[in-house]
Length: 379
Image (cartoon, rainbow, N blue to C red):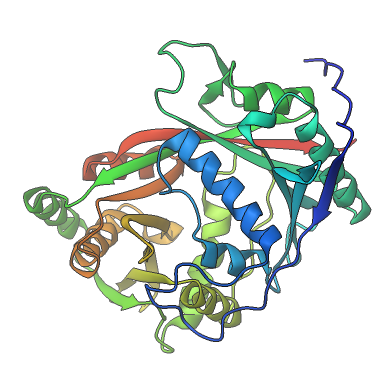
C-alpha cells in the first residue's frame, strides 16, 4: 500500500517527555492504590485507562498506577521513555519509546495513543514522527508496535488484513490498521487474547490431570510464590532464556534474551514493589534433576477480579509428557485458593502456537480479543 499524505501537525501541539518518580521503598500493600505521582505522569496514565475502558469496557488489561510508575522507570535491560502530548495545554495523547539494552539493540518499541475526541487531526502522526526520530538517533532501525481489538468489535466476516509472516489477521477497517499501513508498518504476527472463567470446574481439572499424570510419571512439580528458591534459581533462569527463543515469533526477528540469577531477582523485586503477587509451578525430571517446564500466574490486589497468565514453557527435550497442562492445572488450583475474588484468567498466545492454544481451550479458555504486532524496518 502506498502511504497517503498526512495531516499537518496542529498549531499549539507540544510533545514533551515526562518525569518519573523514584521507586517505592518496599512492597506495596492492597491499600496503596494511588501512590504519589507527578501530574504529567498521572495524565499519561489516565489517558491509558480511558482508552482501556472505551475499547474493552474494563481495566483488566491495564496496569495500575503503581505498576506504571515502576515500569516506566526502566531497568538495566530496557530504557523506557514516556511522553505526553498537549494541545493548547490540554492532554490529548501519549506516546512512548522502549529501547532494549541487552539484546535486540537494533529495535525500538513505540506506542501511540490519541484521546478519541482528538483523533484525525495529525496528533498521532506528529507523535509517531517524534518517536521514530528519537529511535533513529539511538541507532535503532527496526520499530515495533502493538494494537488490540476485542472479539466482536467488527461484524463477523468483515475483511481482514492477514499477518505477513505469522497466521491470523486483524480487521482491515480498524483505525489502527489504517494508521499503521499509512506509516509504513507491516503486520507480522497476530496474538489471541483468551479468558478463562473462574472457578474452573473441579471435575474438569481432575480429568485433565489424570490424563497428564499418565504421561508424566518421571516428573514432579515444584511450587513457589513470589520468589524462586535459591536451590533452583539458576536453572529457572535458563528456562526463562529458552522462553524467549522457543515461542513463535513469526518474522519479527527478535533475538533471544539472556536470563541469569540477577535478572530473575530484578523481575521479582519489581513485581513485589508494583503490588504484584506471582505463583510459579515448575516440572522437574526425576532422573536428571532438570527443570523441564514452568508456568506463571500474576495477580494484583488493586484489580482483584483478574489473574494474568504469564509465561508457560516446556523445554524441547521434555515435550510430549503433558507437562504444560500439568503445571497449569497445579497453578490454577492454587490461584483459586490464593485469590478467591478472581473471576477470570487472561492469557495471550501467538495465533500459530496451536499446541498451547489447544491446552488453553481444553481448560476452558475462550477468545476475547486479538492483538496485531506491527513492524517497520528502515532500508
